[in-house]
Amino acid sequence: MMEASNKGQERIMYRTGAAARLAGLPVETLRVWERRYSLSDAQRSERGQRLYSAEQVARLGLLKQLVDQGHSIGVLAGLSREQLQSMLGLDGQARAVAEAPVRVLLVGAVLSRRIAAMGQGAFGLDVRGHCDALEQAVRLPSDAGADVLVVEMSELDETAVAPIVAARQVTGVAATVVLYRFSPSATIRALRAQGCLVARIPADLAELALLCQSALDGHRPPLQAIAVPTVMAPRFGEEDLARITAAGTQVTCECPRHLSELLLMVGSFERYSQQCASRNPEDAALHAQLALASGRARMMLEDAMEQLALADNLPLPADWR
Image 1 (spheres, one colour):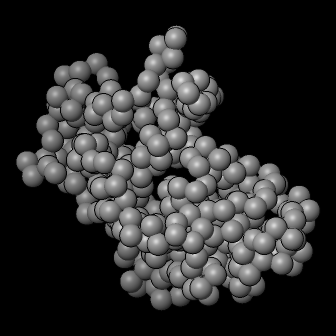
Image 2 (cartoon, one colour; image 1 turned 90 degrees about the horizontal axis):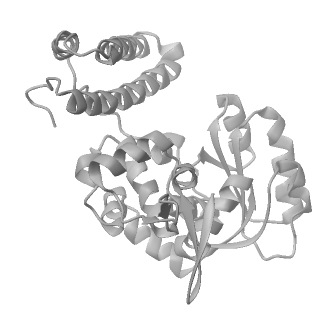
């Protein structure tokens, strides 16, 4: 996973798999990005494996976040970390938070490793204690001077509400931030009713410091305002996909046809959900979320189609961007 290099002082380096996981990327995506866009000056181990520094891993996390928002990786690849942060609107805010680091207690093994790997000071965090699992949180120190309890749970459900409240009371923190990947809406509402700030796990750790500061300031921003990327308009029309399918018959791989079918189906469901949201007031929020989820899936499939079309010399739309 990691390798140490002794040149004056020990420097932790991450192999491709570990770097991808820390940045929130599939390993295959990172390899494609490196091959096509030469994203970083990654070092090589004695066996020829790529090695990434914490700074490079942090930049990969920024790239992933911006690509999720609909930006082209081809445009982003040549930008510096500072430029990427500026595009996310995090540069000035992150510097302001860094001037007065937020003192936190962490619950969650992956989150603790990410912060340790990238250096807590770089993101305006002062970690006063941590544990791997929620059931251990009541043993976190109450005299550490921490201001915020940060709980990371990939799958969050109603059974976590009482332990999180208990951990907050034991540790005596002023605010609680709960991070998740998947959770029922009822659980999110229950935690917010307890005064917790609840948000999806951020790709960029600079965003975590901002969430902690928002919790301390008493802000309770809607989840979408922090975590949900913008859904761009479709880049492939039905005629464009038909041309790609026709051209794909000239190659042995059937992926162009299968991917076109997936894009047609996901795009159709996205439009269907949007229509349901507008004509059914009772379920409007649910169908809006379905439309958003399918739109994000469609954007990812469009990126895959772009890579496939460029690799196999298939026709892209005339106004491709």
